[in-house]
Length: 465
Image (cartoon, rainbow, N blue to C red; front, side):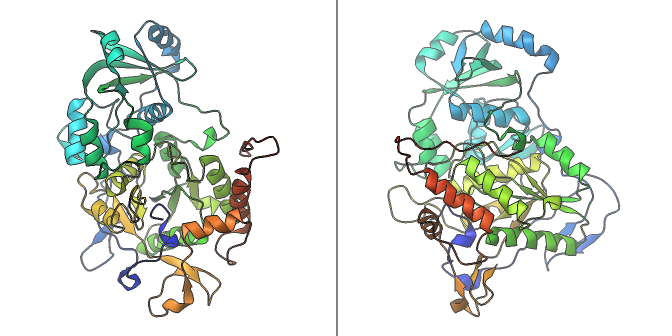
């Protein structure tokens, strides 16, 4: 399926696959004499010891100071109320921590239009990337109840105040155009559209957010939800001179690990002293057939415990964004958000953020367009994009390896469908495909989908500290 990572998919033309190349020149945020390392005939990269600056030059953090929280809570109780959906709350989380810097709240109309039409925003003379609308929808009744108020309060599902949205602007919600421009189709069955747009209100409300306290989910995973500021502090404490980000919404197999460890090796060869991997799984809304976040984090922990990835050079943290499955449009958002978290390198594979067409038996997006778009996208010039080679199971070595087009008969491409079927049937993949501990977690997840004697699906246990 198009939604699985590159190592699961047999390329249509394996011979055309190329090794990791650096497609942009990185300008470091510090001004020091820095040696130039040539990476190819046309591209050079500067080796520096500083983290990349956030978009707009400053990380936006929208959580009010602790001393102000009681008064803001009282103020929220006196304002017109908007009840947040689960996905709305995830966007509040994203905005509050600065993943979407320089946005200071839900988009007003000018920001919404720039995002839809240009995939970027102009901020203080700078162009920053912004490819997916971060908006809050309301219905006609709520619009009328807000009336002339300049502020509204955002409430969670537990009827507790989450944030205040001030200096508000209400404008029409052009659903069809939003869908067409974000996904390139209005075909029925797009997961995010069905979940968050189709039945949403006909109006959008934008404004500046004041988030009353940090967003917590109390699901055993909050300790993995590091904000961009916390991640930057962690990278600094580890003396990172480069940060390379890898996003996935699937279990980590040894092909993924090969891509990540090989990237670090290449960065070391380029002259960096301590490149740090940001393993940053998506933690917001995902479609029903994706492995849930709890199980993915549990599986990722086993990968680190098994030594497949080095805990000393790996930071695992949850990216709180919902998933759109909008292919080349959405992958820009994924890359842009990691700049704000301190990453100056972003690993991208085939069909990032893609999925199968919802009504036809084909992929929704061209598998190579994501990495090409990232190398061209406005506002991402500072980010080094790392396209990776295709990994597959090498039968001669008994492990995952980079595909060698000179001996295609030696490689086995294990599709996502086959992997899931093996796990469901409690069958083992070939030795060397995934660490045993990680595979056992995947098998355990599919076992959990079988109803118990009382007809209920077992709930996952809390992730161990």
